[in-house]
Length: 229
Image (cartoon, rainbow, N blue to C red; front, side):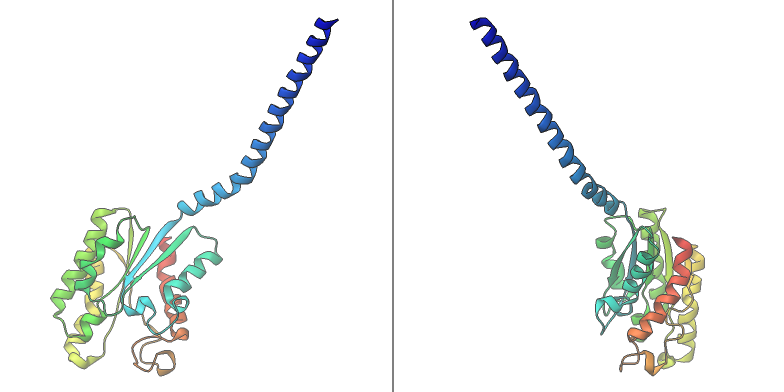
């Protein structure tokens, strides 16, 4: 009789242990189900490709909220089309091609899918010799291509008023096409097309676009950027 009671007690204890293990496994499975979507989102975020806008105050969105800058507007366009790209705004007010070249390594720790180069305007306004500006633009593009051969490069062309003389301004304008041809990269003929010279689309300084002007710039950039994505 005592043996029968012990056997029954052992069986009950074994069933309790099995039941406990089953509940524990089910709880772990439920936890895994809850965690899985978050992990997937993190993985999707890490898989995003980068578009680096590398430029001066025009890229930075001088005088405006960051959300009004054309790189931010490009990000909005990308998100609306559900494209897997993340925009980085590498614009810095006052940047010249020389200073841009000197800080380039800071932005090339990760490979950008597309590198948009918008520099040279400040060189022109300061009357820096065109050969120096051209040399720096070529050096920046070469550095990106050497480190990341598969990165697509888009050069933003710029024009300046004839303050430094008509010959200088014309050669400045032509310089971008020459660099793009030499480096075999895509080009935006004139970043401020439809904006430059229009008081209603520029801040009082007559150089930097208003929020409405930035909208037009974004459309111009997108027209040339979209085929690279």
